[in-house]
Length: 79
Image (cartoon, rainbow, N blue to C red; front, side):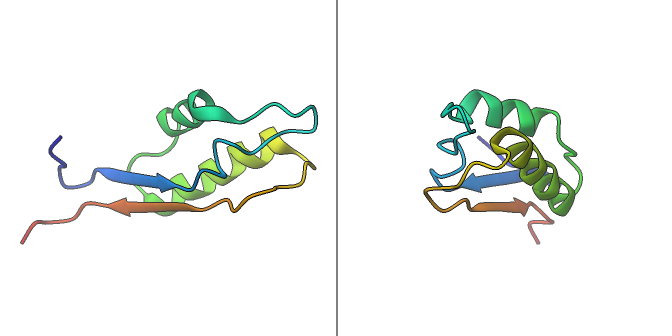
């Protein structure tokens, strides 16, 4: 895979897809991928807020049992 200027690289800890809602259902990789697909691709900070919002909307008041880490990098000029 070759990255282009403007591409985002999104890294998460296992606590993101494993985050559970009150009934005990996991957020999962499918929901994570869907949240990424519907997020703003041009701004890493906006994507971070979008993903945090999607995760919080899913988990609601459920307590997290693992770290929830999301790191987003945006490719810039290769020079």
